[in-house]
Image 1 (spheres, rainbow, N blue to C red):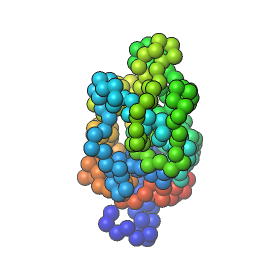
Image 2: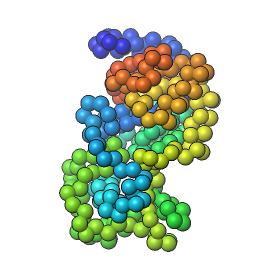
Image 3: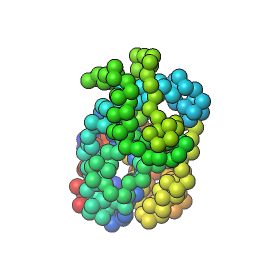
Image 4: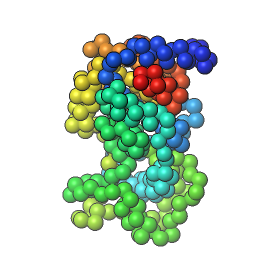
Length: 279
């Protein structure tokens, strides 16, 4: 779609609604659906580029890197947790309620789909709501870990305005003296329940995503550039079945050539308009 005028956008959304009418739609969402909630995307205009993203290898093997991660993660999480669902999230929840959407497979860790009211959500990259112990497997609510951090580091303050990354991280000014949280059961190493760079998506999550896709007869990719292989693999499965594929993303994606429709616009504009037409 080269013409970005309102009339052209309305026309392509109308054609998309005709293509999807009467079909059960699986959604694959990425960071672009949450930008209007104040959470930046990894790529595209306004994205915060990272030269040294945290890998699972560094997290496990480098105490200083782990300490830096927890300081930045704590500072960002308070702001991250205050983000509210935007019209794109709400539109998908309403389409699910109406039986148009079979479920949402999301690469995001922000939990905004669930907060918007979607009930069938597969968080393939995990969630910032939980923290797990890598030794005993105990699972904690992130709010409890935040309380522990502040008790162990009473000097730490969270500024009102922080520059968030898509996963809620903030680059801290200093990590000196910071005490990293630990498991209250076994004193083991904690890790947010998210997939780090260098980790694989857990097999059960990916199989659940495949199952959702098999139960659907159309697919929408919303707000993802499809750089991550797990997303591309799911789109490939949709392509093999020859079901309609719609891609809504401001920038080009790796799968544009496979799509029946590509819409170069924001998900907060397109998804509510699509929801209204499908209703």
